[in-house]
Image 1 (spheres, rainbow, N blue to C red):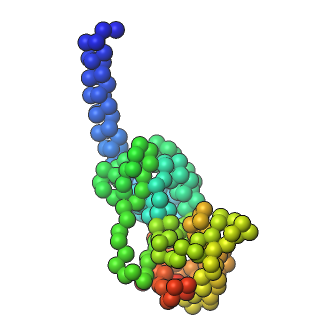
Image 2: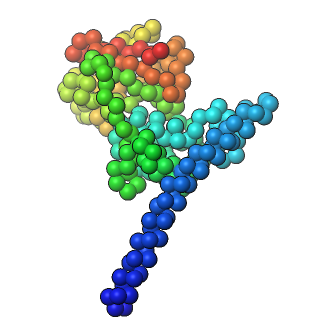
Image 3: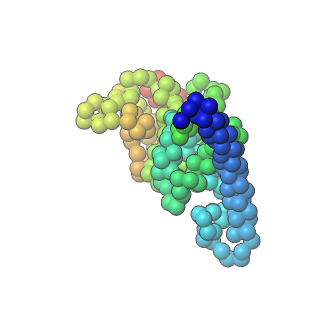
Length: 234
């Protein structure tokens, strides 16, 4: 194949690629619109408390909003398959690669998330106003498993409190954590999962006591260098 033919083919591929990218972004907008319409129709059906076809929640929470929350909670770059896994953990077991990738492209196009590179996305981090207080949004996965994600906020805690992923290998310096209305406990931070190593029962008691749901927020306040208080954000 001569040079002119190669250039002509390259020009055609470039044109088709540009068209495909526009269609890809438009698909995300179409999906979001159909989700909104489906949620509204589901709410209009008397006594219908199940999900509409395609995984649309009757409470009107859109997949795009859940994706943003997943990225915010993770606090790190996430490939598409990791986003899908987190959505399943948060109660969306039927999401497909095509749907989620289209939504991610749509959200990045609208400036709600950042596209790091092909197939990898992250939340857009908002600066914390108070240097002695961080605010974290809860996901359904947090509520189910009894923890919160600290990945975006590791520098809020002393470096020596971050231990190895296995406590038996190397635990970090203990923090005293006061759970508002529940009690207190000591814990370090798991460096692999980027959560307080303390998880489970005390977190679930805290979530239940304050009636917290996915999308609600909790604050972690610094009392002293190795002492912190966790409370709901009203």
